[in-house]
Length: 488
Image 1 (cartoon, rainbow, N blue to C red):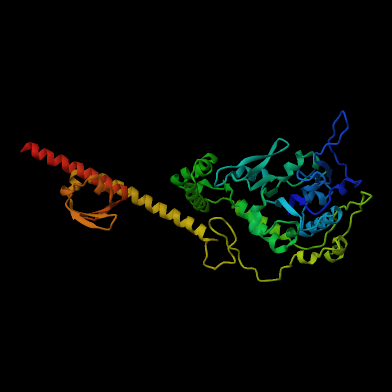
Image 2: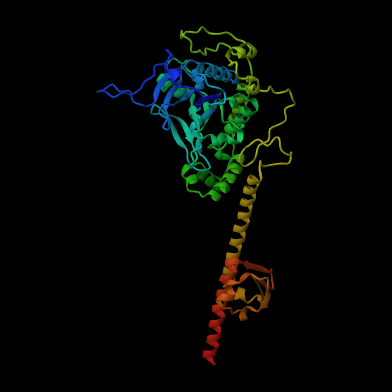
């Protein structure tokens, strides 16, 4: 569930942490004089880095920052390979509040959340299927120099999404050398909010928000939405025609997506999804999406902690493993007396009839709560589809008008035209014969449409094509008149 975190510990004197015998704070001093310098004091403890930073405003003040992995801290800094439930998160947060003297209103500066899931194929094989994202930027994710997965992030840098082989990452990480070997099919999907404004729509800004069931539940769909942004090569090419096959080769080429504009990217993404639906092979992306959501819902349950080894900061840094105990048994012990924890307790879900989930066809967000006829999550997504179709219609119209204008430049085709009807920007409509069509540049610029009434099927030219043809006809008619005068 939750992993990396950075907590801004306001309202507490962090100098008290230095007096704790459990921590070994490292500072800086001047070698010749022994003068202690006002640099941040740092200590590492069971997956957390604790920093005491001097204030730049008042020399007598300090503020504290806790940075590290909640998951590793729960396991005493050994690993983060097992499941980390919401009840475990509550245990860790309550322990931090008690032992560091902070409260659950402390501000979160960044946050990582994700799941470890067992997928039907080896994790490294799935990672090879990752082609790109719609924005065309996917990078190799390395652990101690070894490639174990992929990650992508937007240009604004508000978040980062990592997909990697968990077992491979553990094998090359010396900090997790004592971790039991993991399955080769174990895949880690993780989102890191580098700036908390990324999670502003979910109202997650402080520690207490991590214990609210309704807020944490929505992060599961966000995780699925981020994963669905990936473009996966999961096509069976034997199901495609030659034309579709040539298009599929572009879709599985990362460079193809990088060279597209924003409008082209939306259009090609829609075509990619249509082609994937035709030539789908294993449907691995949809399968993993369901596994992510299922795993997230599993981690949300409020089952008792079984075998948790979270240690508190006491004089003796040895604590025996505790067996399973219910939430009501440990909350009074971990909760500070001056703080009412009841307002932050998760609300258990009532047993209700499950309705089939529906997702937006563009961004993949859950739209189960919307009208049954809804296909998109918002007007923005609906407008994207409308814009693509509108663009296609304009391209077809433009192609037709160019071909038609080229036909009209032939003498035989021009002879079939009897009357030209011109429409200007002011809405004025005038008619004339093609041989009499002579206009000056100022008049040509006002024309928006020219209709041709032929002996066969009528047609028209619009916008720039109409102006181009009028210029062509004007030059032709002026040339013909000049030739007649010279012959006379």
